Length: 286
Image (cartoon, rainbow, N blue to C red):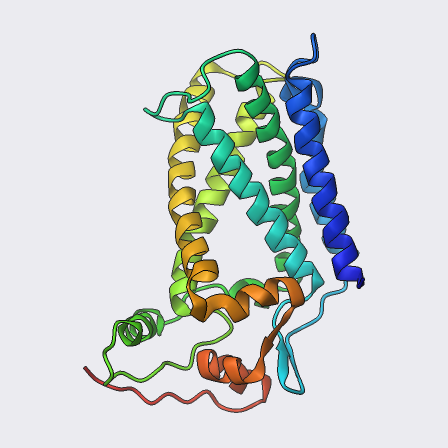
């Protein structure tokens, strides 16, 4: 078993153990909420992510024979930590109720269990998010490659036009990330910032006296950002995991690599950059 598989297995087991502990704690007399008894972990997680980024040696994408390194180990770790944390946060948050949606759990032990599960997901989410943020701060080009360019509208129109059968269009020379992904990234970024800022205010209320007006603002803002994140998350899962055309990239989130032939077709602009060639585009019409 390779190092990546070992790390992934250990991290997965640790997460499952954390969830099991969270649920069990809710049934232990006097155990209380982890948000009350272990608040320090919430504040530690961002620092742990930044520290991990500081000691991580990144590897840039490179063509290796008939395959292309798309994601190094750090990218895989930060993606799954953020993604799994987000998924569990969304499920537990919806179960607990938000905005005008009432709690699905009633009261008592089920609510405490969901709150504790939410706590574990918060810690994982914060670690993954700050690990990514610190990695990005250390190499701003990694952030820039996620941002839309002036080609965003045209490339998105042509990309999805072809999927819908408009044969006169030509496939755009997409970079490492599709322009449509880059536009969605803005929504995810804004939602994440709001969720973290308002979430930390809500966590702080478990340890210190927080002004009522601040909580009154933070709570609905947190819920609205959660709805936006849910929309992004569902779209991301559909386009990145369910559609067969995306399966090579999904596999790369485990292996790190995509086939070179696939990359040349789907991400011609990215391959041109890796080969030191000029990115060319032949536009079609409909």
